[in-house]
Length: 138
Image 1: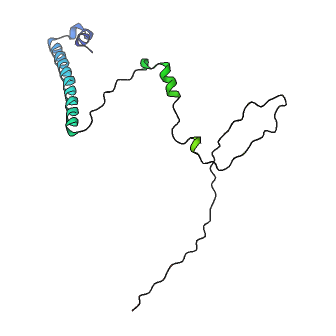
Image 2: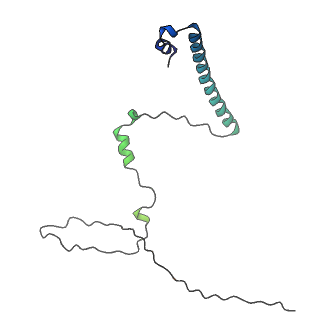
Image 3: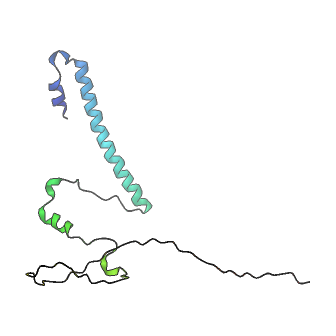
């Protein structure tokens, strides 16, 4: 907020010379603070450069008006991450036949579906262990 806007928002009976002077001091201190923060940021970047670290990336502020429809479409067409059907191990293949197919229908195409399931069952392990017995020979 600019100092002129602040001064105009103060009622006339409260605009004393002290209040106006304090507003001027506050305005100057805010301006100095902003400049000092920028200087600290530049010095941090310089220290990082001297240490051999990469500088901080310059990021543009995000705005919703910059997004257009083509970027949204590109984002929606990204490849899925993680496991895909190509590298899954298939344990069993079944052909499904439908019992109630209308007689007027005709074959269009065949669709492959991968169904993932977890089977949990108890496993009993019978272990037969043999160990050697050793004795000290004199």
